Length: 188
Image (cartoon, rainbow, N blue to C red; front, side, top):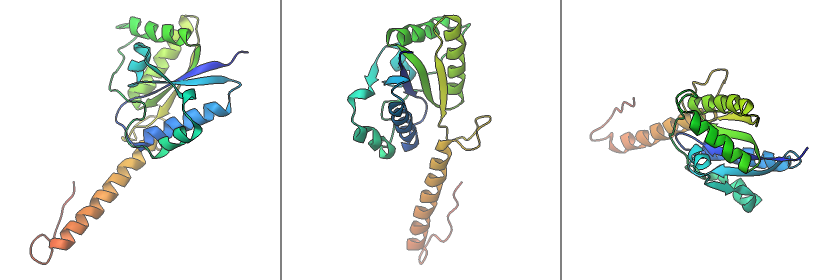
């Protein structure tokens, strides 16, 4: 069996969490080069696949990929672009499959929230029907922690960290002004 390539894309709000997930996906794929030859990342999420704007991660060193773990924002660019239903916009899904075929992509990793999970499901359905089966894997990221059958989404910890740091900083502000003015701070 010839190794297929993988496509990875980021979706939704960005944090270092989304880049840590990218690092994990790419490093794991590299460990299984007998099954996954290369990972292409979509520039600006799924839009990168639709416009065939792919980043060849094989051109990046192991050190650069590892650095994603501490890189803020979205290393490959993200998007808030929701693909409509298969019935309403079959052409976009067919375009994805065309690009996947052109680049020998057999694995699709979509890093995001509920809409991204839904897109993975639709891509897997259509790819099967079109005779080019793609393994579509959702990589959860959402800060909302609202994905079914997911105990804790990786992004949820970033919200907890943000609230903790913001509360700590506010306490310093109150303490520095408490002698003459502000003694109470309410954070909602």
